[in-house]
Image (cartoon, rainbow, N blue to C red):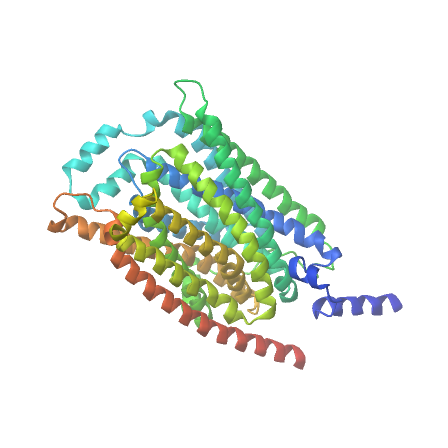
Length: 530
């Protein structure tokens, strides 16, 4: 009897956040109790390896498609709009079907295994035999010269189709493994009281992966430069990087299994009668039912609005920035090394912002924490576009200090995107995930699959549709006079899109904060009455 009463007191302390207070320094940097490390550390390591792979893949996919023959940064909007988005829908259909026939644990392994298999085939089979799989560069150039400027970039995608497929799979890795698999798992096994302390730690630990991915990209770019004469340096780098991505994916699955076996069987961390996502006899909601479920829920509509606004806001900046970066780093190895350095500094900045952001989440309202990202994107994006639009006015001044508008545009864009990514990891992602926690289990599972995979892709695709549409319209315009139409020509229009989206974003944050407060109050009232 005494032991039972003691256990109940311990459980109440864990569930109501009445555990002993941390010291000031520990509360700021590591607000996790010693016994909780068993749960928090492996979850953080899962985040680490997912983000490590995502960063490596992101750097490689951009390097390949931007520097490919007859290609450029302008192909990215077409890829995101017309290939990545449909692929995300297909993935969601397959994932929903898979969830009907297997447990969440097995579905996790099947999903990760599929990605690993593809990247292995690409790195060790397809890329070494590009001359067999791709049409000749001269043939693609002839296609482009024979048709309208408006289809120049789609033809570049056709000519480099395996790079396009790699780009799609790399993009899906982020949506499928991070936004869906990891955060769905975290929300299932973490209580609200834990999330306020754990989620910032997960993000902080994961930021070290950006440092590692940046160093790895830079290292293999340098090593491949000393490859024997006649060897393709980029092929050598790619082979090593693909091997590392595969090993990282295997480690990720091992950690996931360890959590199921040793953490979720510990009643201190998970006290529900069955494991998360266990296969049930009750039929699950199909894709179109899930879509209907999402669009009839104002709460989920607001969450997806945040995701879409972020996707559009960052994409209109990023595409133009990559176009300028290609002018400085014209080959794949150099571009990948540049993206590696970009990832490295993003990681350092994100760790600093993550520590600050974790304390903002604990000390200020959800609205304050969530509104920082759109406001910062608006301010920094305005600086970037202002320089791009009036760059020629600064040319003489920059020449006097030994530089040029392209170099400065890449530098300013890098700083802005690093800050935007840092606030995304530190505040946007965490506040978005916390918005799911007050919901019941049905809303969490059914809404999250569609919101994260479809909504996440829809955000990027919307920005891509706007950019690709403008490229095609201006390509048809007689004013182009046969010249190439590039993203830099669209800067004033993209600037207007950014301003509009950021304002809508802030309004959506405000509306969702009211919804969260209402749902939390209702849940608390129900708990007290019970």
